[in-house]
Amino acid sequence: MTGPGARWLVRRLGQSALTLVCVVLLSFVLVKAAPGDLVDLLASEGQAANEDEIARLRALFGLDVPAWRQLANYLFSVLRFDLGISFRHGRPVAELVLERLPASLLLMAAAIVIASAIGVAAGVFAARRVRSVWDGLVSALAVLFFATPGFWLSLMLVLVFSVKLGWTPVAGMATIGGPPRGAVGQALDILRHLLLPSVALGLFYAAIYARVMRASMLQVLDLDYMRTARAKGVPGHRLVWRHAFWNAVLPIVTLIGIQFGTVFAGAIVVEAIFSWPGLGTLLVEAVTARNYQLVMGVMILSAIVVMAANLVVDALYAVLDPRVRPG
Amino acid sequence: MNGGAALPRRFLRNRAAALGSLVLLAVVAVALLADVIAPRDPLRMVARPELWPFTDPRFPLGTDALGRDIMAIIVHGARTAIGIGVLAAAISTTVGIAVGAAAGYFRGWIDDLLMRFTEVLQTIPNLVIVLALVAVVGPDIVYVVLAIGLVSWTSVARMVRGEFLALREREFVLACRAAGMGDLRIMLREILPNALPPVIVYASFLVSAAILFEAALAFLGLSDPSIASWGRLIGEGRQTLRTSWFIAAIPGVAIVLTVLALNLVGDGLNDALNPRLRDQ
Image 1 (cartoon, rainbow over the protein chains, first blue to last red):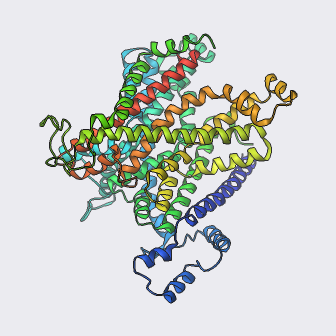
Image 2 (cartoon, rainbow over the protein chains, first blue to last red):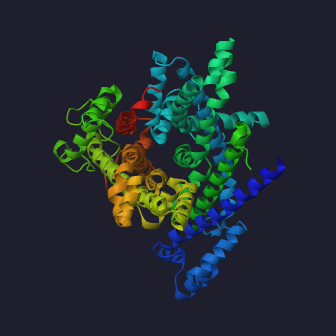
Image 3 (cartoon, one colour):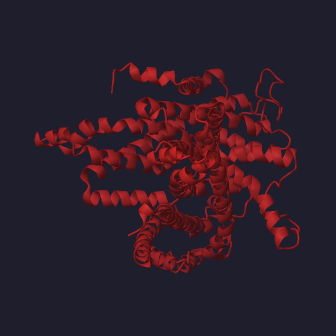
């Protein structure tokens, strides 16, 4: 399937490139709408005293040319993944955001894995005991976690598991002052730090997946081919897991793709609580310091991440459901 | 659709929806009567800091790390949450309807342009755009409400566009066009009322999403500092989590209750409007 598959990929990449140009345009307009530019900000902080110095800095940052030229310059540099320089860090923005990306991706992936595992299991469990007390309990928990803000859940988890019980670390991604030796020790150390933030982020989505999985499962269990399988005498658990499960799980895959952007948004707040060294922590710092160049960089990278995730999910969907093979 | 009385009856027979309505009514009542229940400025220091709840009858929910009455912040925070939720949802519903109606009714290049823009907006995580806006214009409550409203309309637009695409081909619309009725009048008076029910249901979720949004911003210290807010109190309570965890816990319970009530009402409305789906 290299033929149609490759054509599909090229078309999708083309669309993504166009969307990315629009994202850059949008972020540029947003920053241009700000009262005063970077040099004004520096001058107000006393980092540039006289007119000569200010003019020199404007030329240095490319702010001495008309806005449309600045936009063209910015677009071309983004194509080379040059996102400008963060004056406060004295380092390229691209370097700053890329070094934070893995931690964010790890947190999001862990949260999605936890959410899918809990949500799918709870949904199947409830669907097999539809209208029982257990079904009601799953629904009630789903409604509760769907209404719980991730940042508050994070604090309450920290309160119980870190402060009161002392089981998990309060913040960060690794033990300060020397994580355990060896690759396995370090991996386990990161996992220990990852547990609370990913659960806090994941439970909201687990609630959504549980509801969707339950409805989807009930729908599939009611289909003709399931009745046939039952009549054939296929045992219950095999009926559920082999025959119904893979068809019922497709809507969850779709949801993961659609909601990836909101998982990213949720991760920003959760990262800020656990001092997780990811893009969210960086963004909150950048917003507080009015570091526009860095805010734009995070915005563009987050759009790229969301587009990439959608691409992966669509490809995965095509593998799981042969009816939607790209062509 | 059957008679007018059937819908409320079907809605209230759903016990979860009835309970949600009750809680929501209570929160709205507290929000409206905030000045009567807690007449003084909620952000003023009134007592010893970190006073535990249920120890002093004058401050039933205790005081925060600055000695401010938590009860008063919760009561005035209800006004903030409901106000921001309703305003932001109204903005996003209006923008979503306008964009979706124009795209679905006119089709062609207008549709392409508007849907492309919708897609771009959906590609950047909502919170990232709002944080960028706040960085640019500053954490004023007016801008916060506008920012939340202006990033949350994309689903409404898609929903309304779908309805308009389907309805514009129906006979009654063709009849209006044949009678020489103007586009705007057909869109507003003829098609929109038929496309509205799912949007109204969705609006209840938009209100709860906006409440959660503002709470998250305030928690990060990036919303308006001059206004009592549940999210802000949680953010401040984080500093004293070890000694006085109730400061962060209480406003969280208020958020969960309010959002839960709104979602139950939304679910109930949805079921009442689509009775066939109810037993799934």
